[in-house]
Length: 118
Length: 111
Image 1: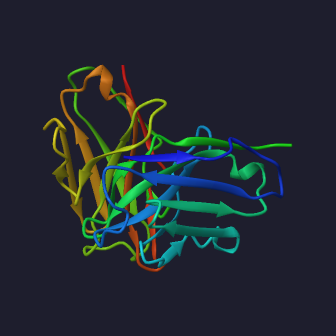
Image 2: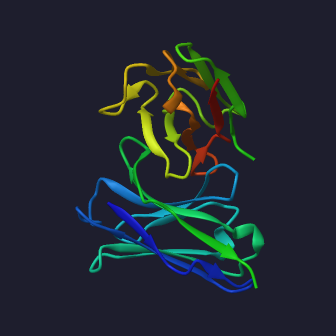
């Protein structure tokens, strides 16, 4: 299971920080990447990026300059930091497990709504 | 903008069959890349429905089927039921972006 946590409200220009805790299995698996996806209200899914347990990461080019994804294997969780947020970053943020061989997202968290507003 | 193009909406009456298309633009998503389909029921997270173009996840009814030819894929749903009403997304991998990509999503309405 995957569970997102973090503030539901972030002020413009500040940093959005979320954590995804993985339970029922180890994040230190060579079979998976661990990813973030977001969905603005009423819109479609947008890939944010992912990380492998050793720290290798990939980011959506459109977010790369503001984005950091990190992993903490001792806590079995991974995190997202998005800097200099605007109202356009308001969305439901999902974490998910990315199967490397299958190239698909086979387990998702329930999602958490983050609103950017003063 | 999505490199995978889906129709914004489709609809059908109970018992009918509908198809949802997913067309890749350019040559970045080709025969070597698989397409996967997700179902998102209202207010919930997406769940993997079809993987590797045409493989149903365990527990998914055989009313759901996927296919792929070249750079286009389709999801077919036969024997439509009211609880099939959801948003459906296709997903693949873009080799030029080096990134996972999603289609824009299709809202299925059961009339």
